[in-house]
Image (cartoon, helix red, strand yellow):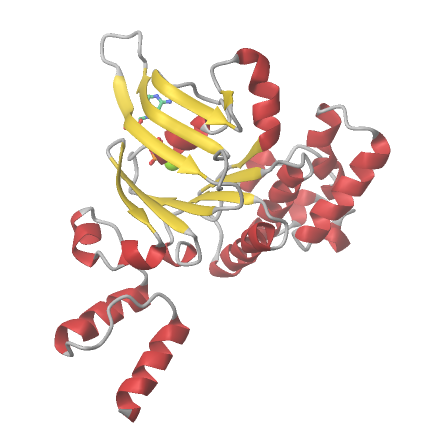
Length: 283
Ligand SMILES: Nc1ncnc2c1ncn2[C@@H]1O[C@H](COP(=O)(O)OP(=O)(O)O)[C@@H](O)[C@H]1O
Ligand SMILES: [Mg+2]
C-alpha cells in the first residue's frame, strides 16, 4: 500500500487579483499527488505557473478553487498553517534575500529559534544541517563573504534546520555559476537519497531534471506532460512545440536516431551516450 500522498493538489485554480476587474488566471485546474520520498522536478517557461503552484504547497497561497492537502491537512485551515509550513520548507531563487544573520550558524539557527526549539536541540540541528550541505567548516564565517553557491547551501541548511519532510526549491540554482549549481544539485540529491527528504525542484536547467523520479511540465497554468524523465524527454517534438529545452545528450541522441534508425533516442546522461556509441561502433 502506498498510503496517503505527502501533498495532494486537487482541481486547483488560482486567480491573482481575484477581486479586481481583470483577474489573472495563473493555475487552471491542477491535479497532482506527490509521494513521500519522491524527487519531483517541475519545468515550464516563464509565466507558466510554477511559482504560483509551489506557493500552494505550503499555504503561502490558497486556491481560488479546489484544495491542497499536506499530509491530510487542508491548506485552507488557518489553524494548520504552522504545521504545514513545518512540513514543507521553501528555498527561493536569490540566496541573499534569505540570509538574515551576520554569521553562518546564526543564520541557520534563525528558523528553529522562531519555532521555539530548545537551545540544545537547535545546536544539534544547526550542526547536522551544515554538515549535510557541506558547510560545517564555514559555521563562523560571514555569509556575505561566501560564494553564491555556498550562500544557497546555507539557505538550504536554514530550511533543513526546521526539519521539514519536504523541501521546495524554486529555481534556487538560477543565479549560480555552473560550479555553484552543481554544489547545490549534489546537496539536493543527497537530501533526497540519504536523508529521505521529499524534494520538489523547479528549474530551467534540463540536466537538473534527469535524476528526478518524475518530471512535470507546465504551460499556461496547466500540467501538459508528466512522467519519468526518460519518458518526458523522449517527447522531443512536444517539448520543442512548448519552446522548452531538452538535455543536450538527449538532443544529440534524437539527431542520431533520425540518421541511424536503431540508435536509441531516450538517452539522458553522457554515460549512457558513451555506452551506446561504444556498442554501435563495436557492432
Ligand atoms: N503577484 C502577482 N500578481 C499578478 N500576477 C502574477 C503575480 N505573480 C505571478 N503572476 C502571473 O501569474 C502567472 C504565473 O506566474 P508564475 O507562477 O510566477 O510563473 P512561473 O513561476 O512559471 O514563471 C503569470 O501570468 C504571471 O504574470
Ligand atoms: Mg517562477
